[in-house]
Image 1 (cartoon, rainbow, N blue to C red):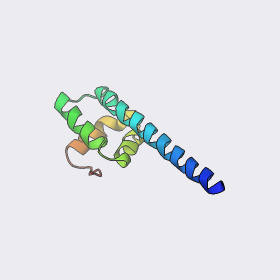
Image 2 (image 1 turned 60 degrees about the vertical axis):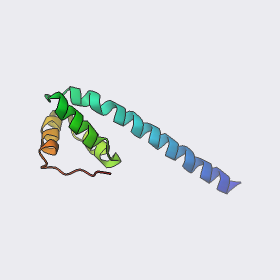
Image 3 (image 1 turned 90 degrees about the vertical axis):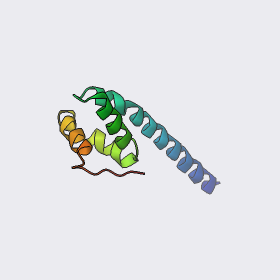
Amino acid sequence: MAQSSTAFLKIADSVGFEDRLATKKEKVFGELENLDLELLDMFAAHAIIVSAEENVDTFYGIPQNYRQAWVGAVLAGKIKLKTT
């Protein structure tokens, strides 16, 4: 019984994590719209950021007042992010 409970909790945590990640990914484009970017640059930045969980976490870890410079550096290839 204890093993079943532990397994269930792990599954529930995993599903919750995936749901939170999906929600964060959905909000990335809206955050990019707040920056001074051309539309095609927004598309490219979005594709890069949502391509890996670590990228999403990094993006949201950057203070908003530094995101413009960070995204510019990513698009310029000065910052390499994980790709899947």
